[in-house]
Amino acid sequence: MIKVHHLNQSRSTRVLWLLEELKLPYEVVHHARDPHTRLAPASLGQVHPLNKAPVIEHKGLVLCESGAVMEYLLDQADSTSLRPHKSDPNYYQYLEWLHFAEGTLALPIIATLLMGMEQRDGSAPMDGYIAKELTLDLNYIAATLEKQAFFAGEQFSAADIMMTITLEFAANLKLLDDKPQIQAYLKKVQNREAYQAARALG
Image (cartoon, rainbow, N blue to C red; front, side, top):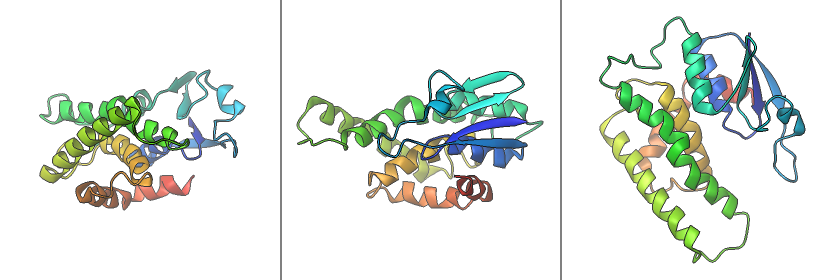
């Protein structure tokens, strides 16, 4: 049985979503953020020293990092359409977006979230850098979704799961208000039964 350590208001929702899509058996251990500091509780640090979610436990393995967890779970499925085969022309496009979600997109979005917690006038060097990165990233995403249905082409994949959860953070920060292509995409994937089941868990 795969054990998922789930932190509320975190990106670990993507792991629950993938497990629902794959129909793999799992159990959830819930961890709650401190209501004042918004930090993860010590209970999560007892599972993995990084004290972050998602974390899974399976057959003696304790694994952190969303991308690594997603790849591991895909390997546990007998077969899946959620990851193109390496011979598929869309495979490396899938791989790019799978890593783009955390490697490129997450930084300016999380920075926007954190910097919004303090008084700023928008003139600091970091503000300009973040604005530039957000514009570049979101325009690239919008252009991709204008020409194809999903991030790895015309078929839904685990790359969409990775990207959706990060894009939801952006939507909550009002960063997608002028991006109708991305908003329409989010509505489409959020209608998936597996997504709804994962959200219901926390």
